[in-house]
Image (cartoon, rainbow, N blue to C red; front, side, top):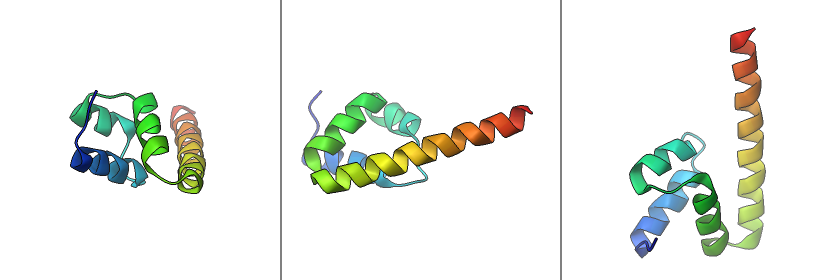
Length: 72
C-alpha cells in the first residue's frame, strides 16, 4: 500500500505515541502491526527504531501483566 509523505508522518507520530495502540492505526490506515513496524524501520533512524521497539516491547509486557491481574 502506498502512503503519502503526510500519511507516513502521521503513522510514525501515532506509533511513537505511548497512548496509541496498533489497533487504532489499523482502523485508520487498514494496516497491521507488521506493516507499521516496516514503515517505522524504513522511515526513521536505525537507533530511533531500536529505541521505539524496546518501548513497544515493554508496553506490551506491561499490558499483559495488567490483563493477568484483572483476571485473577
